[in-house]
Image (tube, rainbow over all chains, first blue to last red; front, side, top):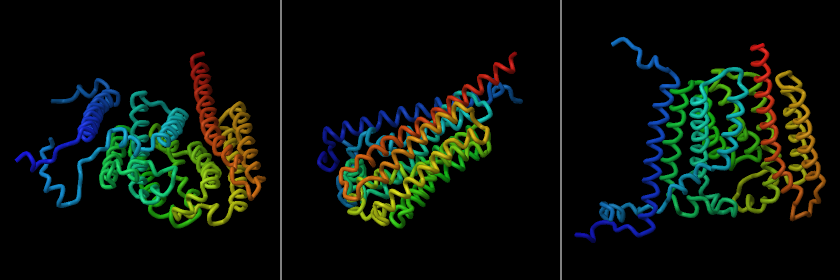
Length: 51
Length: 316
């Protein structure tokens, strides 16, 4: 059964880890960018809205 | 182990990727990006309006990623010719580290992401200009002009010249004469800069079948055109001062840098036709980078000083 799946080589594992870390950091950066930009663009007014 | 069945790969001739994050970063052409970041930043700072510094950083990042995305799309399309030239054969696609389809997806996703970010967080004029730049570089230049006319880098140079206009538009929401002057400086600078490289790499361009000016019109004609564009570049460099947008200090610095550019181009014109080492062309290529950095740094410094004086005057 094991033989039916792809087995990664050491360099493929290293490359995948490098890509995964980069994707994680990029996603985190995007969340921070949009959070900070929202505050910078609207200021405290972002919380001041009719319910 | 990866939870992928071997048969799924064997059927379509795929293999597990060995591309690292660094390989993807290389697809973005970081050196070109650094020039884009700098010129766009100058456009943003010199614009007659202020923007929250956080939004400035985000705007610059979006412009840089958009420029990088167009670089990735260029590398995807040009992988065949890149493989034939020593300067580009080690790029991620020709060296086999990244598959063409991966580069295409990466370029398209970053293009959409950068344009949307700039549009939503800054303004849609700047975002439209960024989208146009990506389209112009990837489609008009890479897919059409590059392989069909010796004017490829003259017309295609517009893509590299737009970043300061995007930066200006991101802050002001408009395009003005000052930003178009910054565009003109880079646009007119591109032919002597690129043709200097094309002169000493003409054999490689010839092998790859790219119709660069030295391969089509010959070295003497190219060198005359380089001098012509260098004179125009020097004139456009001092134009912001002549039109009253910058101080005399900037004008003097721009004139000195421009004279240097014309001098180096003159040396290239005087180069012997049989010269194979082409030191003058290599020197011009190096100086051209210094010129562009110098003139934009001078413009930036002048704009900052003028604004500081205006603010201190307003306080008094």
